Length: 190
Image (cartoon, rainbow, N blue to C red; front, side, top):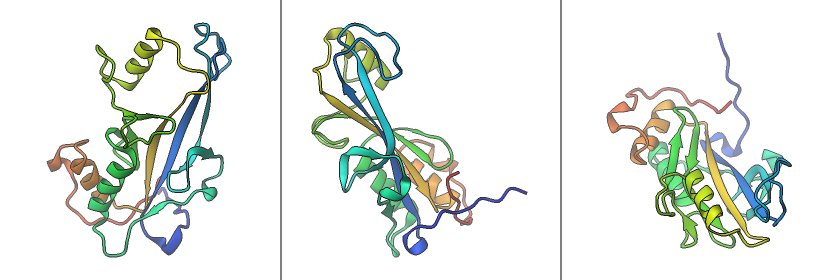
């Protein structure tokens, strides 16, 4: 029998934690992993826990240094989760069937994932994915040195399987009839 340990959270209510990757173009000839890349297209990458309310363009190494979004007491958890994910991340690209929702947008500093300077996949003609956009755009012209981009992922903690499926269905990530119908106990992310 496998036991899942819940991490403590404020008021022990369902919460959403976020992780993000911030890429800073540095004009070098190497990528974040030290591999050679096209001259002038080099970048560094910072990934970690993200606090969109307090420090939008920074990531933290320790989850304890960020403040999660906490589901209000009287809210329907599945509906609240869907609304909060859309408000924080904009369009979503993927739901892993568990606790992770991946954002489909990328923002350019000082923009936000849900603001006018965010980019949806397919923004570059002939592509339909975020990676395709990045590759195509990079071939069009080198990014400005110091330019930063951010992409983010949400991690739902303390929501029941039904709440997670409800949110995924409301966001169009799974068919509506694919939701479970039981009010099962809350689960946590690994």
